[in-house]
Amino acid sequence: MRRRALIVGNWKMNGLIEPACDLADGILFGLGQRADRMLHCEVVICPPATALHALHQRLGSGTLKLGGQNLSEHESGPHTGELCGIMLRNVGCWYVIVGHSERRASGEGNEVVGRKMAAAFRDGLTPIVCVGESLDERERGAAEAVVREQIAALLPHVPDARNKRESLVVAYEPVWAIGTGRNAEPEQIVAMHGFLRALLTEALGAAGEKVRILYGGSLKPANARTILALGDVDGGLIGGAALKATDFLAIIDAVPDEF
Ligand code: 13P
Image 1: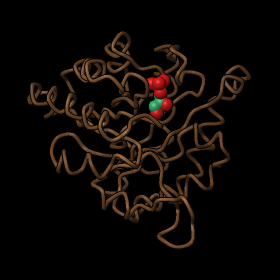
Image 2 (image 1 turned 180 degrees about the horizontal axis):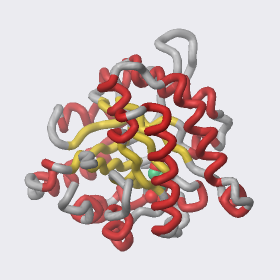
Image 3 (image 1 turned 45 degrees about the vertical axis):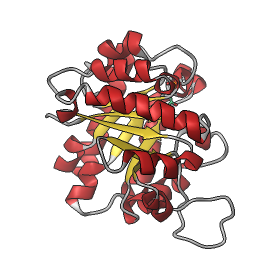
């Protein structure tokens, strides 16, 4: 099954407006030199919300797409400090990360993540839903059980419309690999992505075959070629290495040609 590769940069809480624009300019320039690659690879950056408007002005609706890092499950109203999907759309976002482990760590549970994914679909955004186990869970042999529960909480919220189902993106980000420099081993990635694919096709039928499953966790130029070539790895969700245009572009260059 061929799926269009998806490379997503999660800038987390890094980047004032000017340096964010400089970084985006660097990436955009690099993409311009890789026009053939863009035919089989989609590239998204998720900068801090404060930089989205300026970046939207700069990027328009070109090859480098924008995503939010989080959204509220609500449509509007008295939710101080929150942003809803429509607001993200308003500043040019196509995608939104949902349930990143750094948000789950501050109390966002599976149920909330499911409702946020539903809100993303409702508001016309493509959700990139993060799943993944902690080191303790892996060491206890509970990695699959944890991920199974995370996926199970999403399923009731996946829309019936086939095009929406197929657009879902799941990112496997083992918590112990995030920001540690230690990526998951290829065998661990293959096993978990295969497990995720089986869960998704069992629940969503043929649409589950189309869902893109990204790997995230210390993905960098040095390991990207190996990881992005693995079975059922349809791209990457990148933190640290997304903050330097040359590194991010090197990861894009590592996407296998057969995508
Ligand atoms: P690192 O690439 O810095 O490990 O971060 C991964 C991540 O959390 C992306 O969402």
